[in-house]
Image (cartoon, rainbow, N blue to C red; front, side):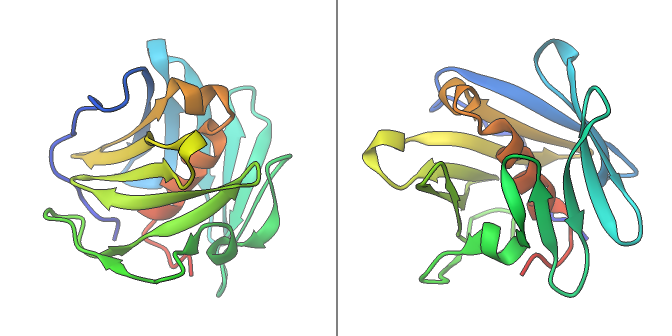
Length: 181
């Protein structure tokens, strides 16, 4: 069962950001539509017994997650097919992070985008993306969940650098309730 979150935190520390809402069917991130600013439809997420597909608004499938013993992910032009555990891997220290809310315990996860390493970590009532070097310092993205709504807030700089797709895929994986290791 996917984790639940408290009230949506503000994005005060991301001065310019874009908000993307995951409108779910039956409280399931694996069956949803993703809408951005001005209620513009960006993605559709559909799942069957063995896989989840993510399609752009024009219907073109751009990513697929295969739910098998070791889940795999592939995204056209972004991620070559690989285990989800390799793409968004546990941090080297495998340290558990215990936020002070209903997220429970989560491990920090890292991913490499454009040759640089980024870390997803629980922060308050959210899961936040930060760069690990000074050129990408600061909060780049934030995932929150309240009631039947999942929200991804993405810094404009991250959006302009092509982080929308990887952030949407990360959101789906984190909140899927499936084993991604």
